Length: 170
Image (tube, rainbow, N blue to C red; front, side):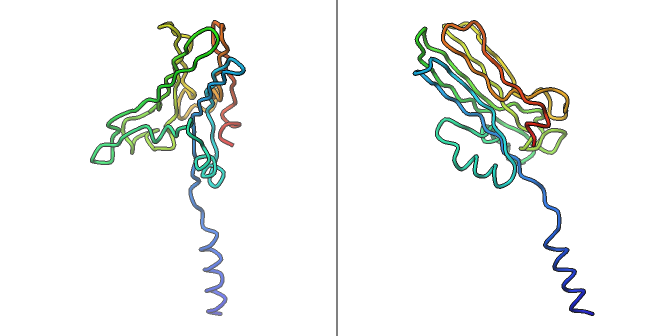
């Protein structure tokens, strides 16, 4: 009977629930051949997320890695941005990307690292073309999430691709 109880305990221990790990990336692509600049917002859970991050390439960043946390480990102290320039047939597009923080308190509502989203700004010759946040709110399950912002040369505005909250966090 004791061996049976130990067996049941081992099975229960191996089946214990664990928290999922969720990964997000922003990926920049200046495609001069097709006269287009694109920034994608990607996501994946657990092993797929680890693979996504491991194979992200030089022009992709985790929004959560673009923040510095203060010495207490409780507050966000600094936000960093990524700046890129894309030379298309009609001029130079400046692309700035950064983390969107919902709470400066890491332990507060929407403050955990997995809640950090991203934003993008595209300008040309000092004129704003696009300024978008990929996610509206960390708890708003009804709003779509922007998964791609793209712009072709001579376009007046960016083209957005969106996914529902459930599609993005699948």
